[in-house]
Each structure stands twice: as C-alpha cells, then as structure tokens.
Image 1: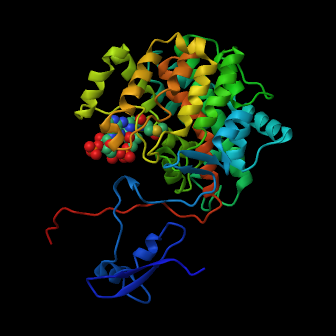
Image 2: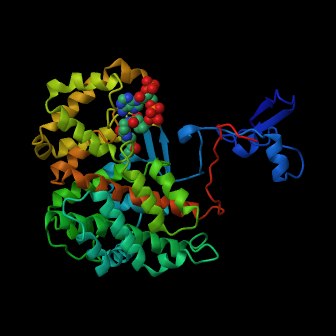
Image 3: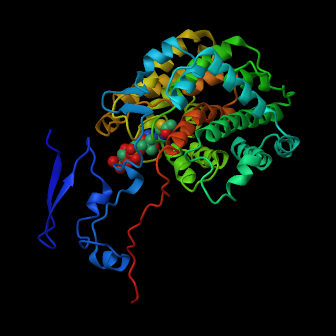
Amino acid sequence: MEQQHLSVTDSRTGKEYTIPIEGDYVRAADIAKIGAPEGKIDLAALQAAHPLRVIDNGFANTACMESSITHIDGLRGTIRYRDFPIEGLFHEYIYEDVMHLIIWGHLPNDQQKAHVREAMAKAMNPPQSVKDVITAFPRDSETFPMILAGMSAFAASDSVVCKTRHQQSAMFHGHLDVADEALVRTIGYLATTISLIYCHKNEKTWTAPEPERNLLGNLLLMMGIADPQVEKCLAKLWILYADHEMTNSTAAVLHAGSTLIDPVAAITAGIICGYGPLHGGAIDLAYEGFRAIGTPERVPPFIERIKAKGGRLFGYGHRVYKTRDPRVSLIEELLKEHRDAVDANPLLRVAMAVDKYANQDAYFIERGLKANADLMGCFLYTAMGFDTDMIIAITILSRVPGALAHWRESLTQPVKLWRPQQKYKAPLAN
Ligand code: ACO
C-alpha cells in the first residue's frame, strides 16, 4: 500500500515537504524538518532557521509513547487490556490475573502467581524506620503526605533503589529481571504504607503479610479487615482501575523514569499526580460534592451553579471519553450485587440524581461531558466500610501495577530523556 502522507508547502519559503503518516500519527521530528536547514544540522543553524514546532497545552493531541498495553476508544466507549475487552476480564477473572496480564502481557498460571505473591509479601514487611515514620504523624493527618513519607522511608531501606542514582549505566533498561524484582517490591511497599496509615489512623494493630496471599489479600490482612465480601468486591472493582493508558499520573511515572531513576521514585511522581483534584482526587471530591448537596432535591441549584462556572462537577467529564465511561456500567453491576450495603448510604440517591440531571442538560451534552468512573466508585468503598480519606490511596494502589507496566515497557525502548519544549513569549531586551 502506498505510504500515506501530508504534502505541506511552507508559505514562508515556498518549499514543499512530504510528512509521512503512520496510522493516524505524524512524527514531530518530521514536522521539525519544515524550515530546518538541509544537510548536517548544527544547533546554531537550526535555531536561526526557525524550524516548525508543535505547541499543545495540556498535551491534548500529542502522543508521547508507543505502547501495547491498553487501548481505549473514547468515542465508542471501550477499553481493552492487552487486547482483552475489559468486560470479559471483569466477569471471568479477578484483579490478580489482570495485574499479571497488564504487566507481563499474559494471564498467569499458578506457579507464576505463587512466585509473585511470595516476592511481594517479602517486600511488604516494613523496616522499623517505615513504621516509625508513619506513627510519627498525628492520627488525623492527610493520607497523601503520609504516603510520600512511607515510600521515602522504604526507598531509603532498599539497597538496589539507593544504588540507582550512583550508576553510570542504566540499571533497569534492558535488565527486565532486575526491573521485575524492583517493581514487585515497589507495589508491596505501597500496600504496606497504606495499611500502616490505615492502622495508625484507626488505632488498629498491624498484621504481617503472608506469602501465599495476593496483593489485595495481603492489603486487607495487614489492615486487619477479615470480611471476604470486601476482598470479593475489590478484586472486581480494582480491574476497572488497573490501567487507563497514558493518564496524567502514568505520564508522570514515565517522565521521572526517563531520568533512569528507580521505580519507587518514579511511582512517587505518579502518586503525587494521582491525588490532584482533576485526576484521581476527583473520586474524593465527587463524594464531598454529594455530601454538600445532601438531598436529591438540592441537585438542580448545585448543577446550575456549576454551569455558571462556579466550579466543576467532579466525577464528570474526561479527556478521552466523549461518551459514557465503560467502567461506569460495570461499577453499577457491582453496586447492584452489593445493594444492601450500598443502599444504606443515602448519598447514593444524590449521586444518581446528579447523573440524571447532568446527563440530560445541554451544558454537559454540548461539551460531551458524561459520568466517569470516579462518580460512583466511592460508594463501593464506603459500603465496604472505608473512610473517604483512604479511598484515593486504595484506588492509587490498584493503578500502580498498571503504571509500572508502562515503566517496564519503557525499559524495552531506547533510553530517551523526556524534555518538552516551551514557547517563550515575553519580550527580549536584546
Ligand atoms: N464540570 C463542569 N464543566 C466541565 C467539566 C466538569 N466536570 N469538565 C469540563 N468542563 C467544561 C470546561 O469548563 C470547559 O467549558 P468551556 O468550553 O465553557 O470553557 C469544557 O468543559 C472543556 O473543558 P476542559 O477542561 O478543556 O476539558 P479537558 O478534556 O481538559 O478536561 C477533565 C478533562 C479535567 C477530566 C474535566 O472534564 C474535569 O475537570 N472533570 C472533573 C474532574 C474529574 O472528574 N476528573 C476525573 C477524570 S477521570 C481520572 O482522571 C481518574
């Protein structure tokens, strides 16, 4: 088939260029050839020639990675992990299987599961420094800074991680065996940190992990939560949050990772983004919004205030989906399954009234704003007995294996520091 291309004439010079199209993409490097001097390019000549650049605030139309992990079709409303539709995975598997699929590209056998369980449980045992750091916080502290402190203390105790900064050559690039061990430890560190925070805040005794349990099983064990219904529910819910292609937080992990830093540090960058109100933090703010509304009758004035630009409706809108987020229907299935526990929370009726009102309103329809997975996700957590200040932390843990799958994938590609450009627009004196 003939190579698809763009034919471009630069009106500044009258020169013509052929820009190859691969799939639906053009390469920024090919755009940079427009206006660039021909032949061998030295930096001074390049700057003088003003080659064409792309400016894209918020990366709304720029791909920064080529990936084979998750495919999202935002117009049809579909998600596929490693080409498996999310609905099939949700109905037939549990989170542990999907975690393996996303990271290593295949569904695991029993031996593979046992191997990862054992290594992760080993990493979950915290040194005293981690316990001390968490318990040094007042019990009513924000969860997020406590997580950063716990992860830092874990990083300081990990000899491989500590070595990363002093290596002349890449420690993880091209060394997937070393990377796999480190990423499994990283997931374990976050699970333990969250469980220690939960126990400290709730004045509960922390329980040591067991090598035959999976990530979720050990998280709940360490937290002292013994109800099998909770594990059953989260083992499904977490599938929906396991990966979401190049999100803000995954991009942060890769951005940090591109400096050749270790996975604990890279994942910390992602955790920071994961807490932001416009990203993972929306799950908490959506719930706060329902609390502020209080009853379904008070939904219309609340939404009218938002339409008058008095804020955003959290749990609504998405950069990729311009239709209903496919995870919402699967969350609704879980809500039905756990109806008794969920219905006990009167705010669910408020959330449903919000969705009904916004879904039929011209403001939201015209802008393609629909419910996202953060609108209702919190209700399963509250029904399972979690305080709202732990919900984002637990949701982030369910995403961390996905983000690390992208980090692992980046290790199979040539080392390339991520360094975007800016357009300088203030005047220069000379
Ligand atoms: N409530 C009200 N108005 C909204 C919302 C919202 N939730 N989302 C977007 N808009 C409006 C904007 O005000 C803007 O209106 P305008 O054209 O009159 O100026 C228009 O829709 C486009 O908004 P952008 O911010 O340019 O859209 P973008 O694609 O960048 O935003 C985002 C995506 C950040 C998710 C946005 O929809 C939002 O803020 N949602 C609320 C926060 C949220 O739920 N985040 C979770 C997303 S899922 C996740 O990350 C885990």
